[in-house]
Length: 176
Image (cartoon, rainbow, N blue to C red):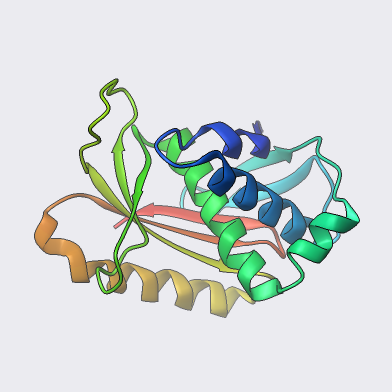
């Protein structure tokens, strides 16, 4: 079973601000803690039938709990962090730009091997999260988000969906 240090969320989006990464990491940790998960918890990647061991060393402080007390917002931000991490782990891309509304996606991905300042859009990413979803809810969310990416299909760029359920925990990171 592959070990994934979720604290890598801090470094997998160099095109975005450090505060974006820190907030997403904290939110992901909050959501895992909210479901009583500890470091070393098994996470199923349902799209590839793989299991990962999620690791972290940051303690969940009371300040973090107060900061991320809105569970719905924390779930969304935590899922964005997990999506950034899995995009970096499983694809040749990383998040480079927050997408505008009504594009059907949340982020544009760029080639992580490029060492230039002007980032070029290379793929699309739609993200969603569940704090503790049922199997049916998880499956519905995957289907819905895949359909949603069609709004930006005119870009002709590959699209990915990343759905994180912090309850199990599990992730579906799929190319559409």
